[in-house]
Image (cartoon, rainbow, N blue to C red; front, side, top):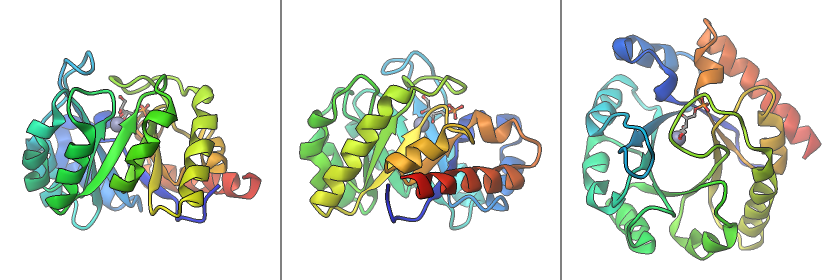
Length: 228
Ligand code: DX5
Ligand code: ZN
């Protein structure tokens, strides 16, 4: 497990996008530290979501909530500047996408943004570890990316543990984020394995009281601290 503070990141993909400003208010008053914004291009993943305008809208609406932007797109290097100028605090690119990953991560940092590396469930961690010095965050996908509402993949748990052990051993300052199928039932195992940021869409937004849902998720997650 980790001594880093637990952060909750509601995924905007599961919000009511027809009422984005009200949803932003709801997230802001929920006590969540981050908001997670899924950008999908219909190529890297078989689904299309939204673009930099969504980030711009949320930047205006969200005050000092951290905007965590997850690029599930090919050639993320071509679009990094747009998303940073739109207001991303952390820009995450996929190891599996078509780009020079090390160069993209370095460029993101040079532009004054936190750089994150997202890794799909089948990808071995050994391919990501050499890039850790260039990262502020690692997203370990706990579903195959593309859609909200999928079932959590418990086979990713050993990868979370391996990542945390590597980070502790090498004394890196890196958040470990889990993304996909996270809820009260799956959060404790992720935290016990060493994650400290929980992205959650469906499990949070299906509840009427988002603030209460965040409190509950945080409490479940904390039980993972005791068992890790
Ligand atoms: C999946 C996205 C996730 C998604 C999570 O491709 O990267 O961020 O919004 O949604 P839930 O929590 O519903 O699995
Ligand atoms: Zn995501």
